[in-house]
Amino acid sequence: AQTVTQSQPEMSVQEAETVTLSCTYDTSESDYYLFWYKQPPSRQMILVIRQEAYKQQNATENRFSVNFQKAAKSFSLKISDSQLGDAAMYFCAYRSAGDKLIFGTGTRLQVFP
Amino acid sequence: NAGVTQTPKFRVLKTGQSMTLLCAQDMNHEYMYWYRQDPGMGLRLIHYSVGEGTTAKGEVPDGYNVSRLKKQNFLLGLESAAPSQTSVYFCASSRHPNQPQHFGDGTRLSIL
Image (tube, rainbow over all chains, first blue to last red; front, top):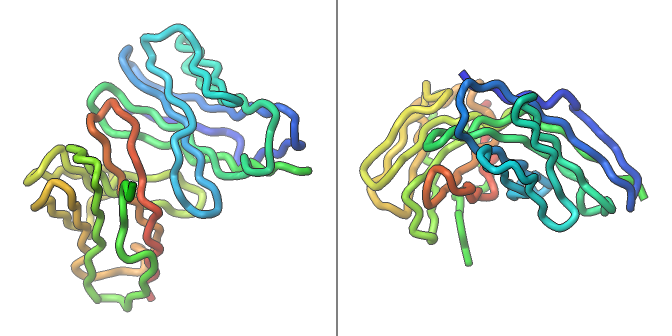
């Protein structure tokens, strides 16, 4: 069975600095998708970024980028120029082709002014 | 755009009571999902549906039933609520399983 591990329960960063959130996963499949979701105090689940495993190029969305290391089964999220509004829980999620999402336990990110 | 709407947002039940959570989406998505979120854990899939009239079990289906009589609605039922079902429930939908899921705002359910 696939598993997703987020080993950092909490992280903190100063405004305007860069922070990296870690995620590792375990799978025997070659075709899958990886996601980072943000959950602010409002409880909404917001998609931050998505990576297809067959793509070698790391996904980027404005200040958010990933470091996808397929062989190492690692999928970290880098947030550049951190803003106060980035404070939230961040969940890493895995989905094999046509299957269900499996979430990690989350990392709480605090942003200090 | 309404997206995914969950009703109600909060509810308190007594042990043994029954209730139904409603999820409605206006994006014409085929796939719909019910998750629960507990402290210190990620979202866990309860049940899901791959189209109108279909349902399937997820990771933690026990104690819950679902129905998808209309494409836009996915109902989650608790027949006899238990304190262990105290949680935040999220509904989500997607056009295709490989497409990102769109989430509702969640329902906080407390069972005393």
